[in-house]
Image (cartoon, rainbow, N blue to C red; front, top):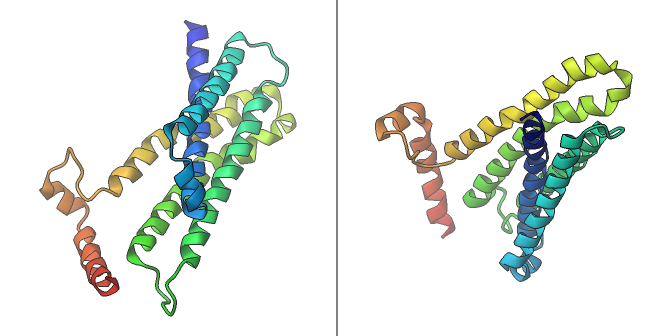
Length: 209
């Protein structure tokens, strides 16, 4: 039972950052390299990348289950550092491309691009909030005693990673015009600002069209 639990922890800790990196790669290519994105839309490319991520995940989880490997925890530290750097770079590049792609003679961003910019910005904030603590703490493992690192530093870092499972779905639901399991009355009470924002966006879309 304990081995199965360690294996599931390994899957959770590894698959999340790696698959998020794949999503960031997909958005990065779609925005900055649209021609190549059209050429790589076949499912075989995404399937191959997903299989690679699953192989890396199961290899890490199996090694975590076996245990006893020297400096094994530094593998996860290296993975978090690499995925965090990649995700931040992708999202910042996408935001820069959206900010730069304004129509000639117009200072304001197109409403649809502004909406995409805000969405990417919110994703970047979530990534920084969830992954910066372990990125800032785990590389300095050698500076802590083993007990302090295992009992204090690791739980804090993993707490920020685990809370992303709640924050990310809430952000997704917050972008929906209608939440499936809430009535219109509840949505109006909770999101009273949404209609006003839509009224501001609609005239701009009509002008641009």
